[in-house]
Figure 1 (cartoon, rainbow, N blue to C red):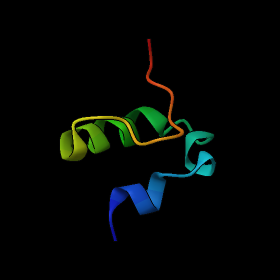
Figure 2 (figure 1 turned 30 degrees about the horizontal axis):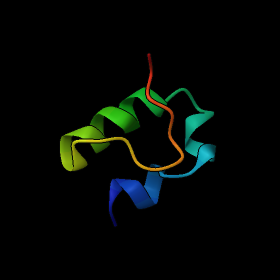
Figure 3 (figure 1 turned 90 degrees about the horizontal axis):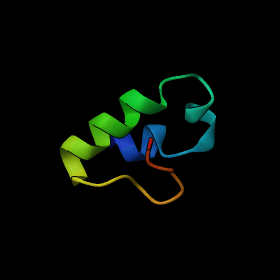
Figure 4 (figure 1 turned 120 degrees about the horizontal axis):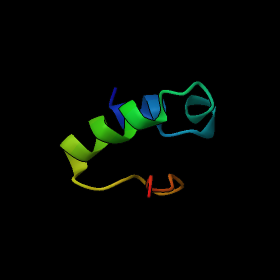
Length: 40
């Protein structure tokens, strides 16, 4: 199971782990997954 499948949903974003999820996904994909707004 990939991180995208585990934390690619808004439910994960509400737990404050969105930054971690995005950083982890960036390390894999090099970009944020669709539906996730980049932290500006």
